[in-house]
Length: 240
Length: 240
DNA sequence: CAAACCAATCTGGTTAACCAATTTAAGAAA
DNA sequence: TTTCTTAAATTGGTTAACCAGATTGGTTTG
Image (cartoon, rainbow over all chains, first blue to last red):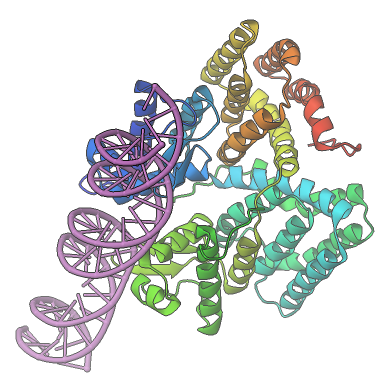
């Protein structure tokens, strides 16, 4: 599907090559945590790519916490140790695009936890926001309109109420891909949306009552269709 | 939180302002999924910032799956719906840096799952890699050297064997911060590393035997210190 | 009238020159 | 020799000009 004529190289391909080169460089020069990488200009010359490419690759590694670049000073190797860095760079290079099954599996794992945490930690403000999202969802469903987005926003509101910023971030990362896949494969049938209102309301009520176990159970019930999709169907490809 | 004299604005601050502006623009112009954003040049002029800043902000939103930029064509709004996008942009702006507790909490959640999946899905090649990481860890410990990195690499090898690319990615994202915090707060005492070898070995063996429940139990035992660190009060998640 | 064509224009990507903060080391002062 | 000063070199960040491919709108052609 992704067949590409080799004349034009993919952007990610160039980046991975740069990251691979950086990995070799660090290994070859025995650079240790805290050490300074060669300047962006030297790297671009050495690797034969543009400086912007170098900058993008560095930004990516900065995102993963492997490098730290300081203005007017240089790019430094983070304080995580040479061995860990070597291993992580290899992992990053090996990373593949997530398949739908992997996304759903992760979503279920995250949400069964966030809903429990939300029940334990939610503030009054959190409750208001969750309720608002719930009402917006119900209204769309009652008008027989598509409500996939409102559905997800309800779940994101719960993630926010969990008080765990890492899980909140991860939910944000996977949500758009979940949405596009849902709409592509029509996972959410509109006929089941009415049941969805009831289920959402029960989840909300459990959070209001600060009952984490019940909240988790209700979420699990809500996910029964997803479970089927995740484990009883064939793997669904995902380009991009 | 970083205290900064307002003369020099943080990079992330500028980016958030740009994202906020883009959010308003989309809302004001009623842009819908599939629509084209104004060109980078126009945006930079309209917002009064450099084009590189615009590009970085767009790249960030591209990472979250909200925008898609096509070469020589334009930057488009992803197919996730206006409401979802509006909510997600708000969430992204609201994102704070993860605290250590949040990181540990998420790590425990992820690893109790990845170790089960690894026990179910591991290939022979996976076993070799996990064993290699285990041996490297044991050797360091036996030499009474610091083995935090090898420890984490063992866990990353398990994440790889889980066959879930999303969880693997998430483990990679949180690992460097975990390492730096570990070394900062000396969470891992060297006296407990010898026990660590035994625990790692048991986890490995459970994966070899394809016993997911046992693998999970052993991992839980391995995390008992982390639990203490994360929850001074009891509030330990049980299933999944 | 519709389809085909083509050139002007617009796009994200790339390149190179430039900027200000930082680092450096050579030299002056003690 | 040691310490302080200072100016040149180096750095990541910024800017603007440029590139090749895509888009667009008007013109030609059947």
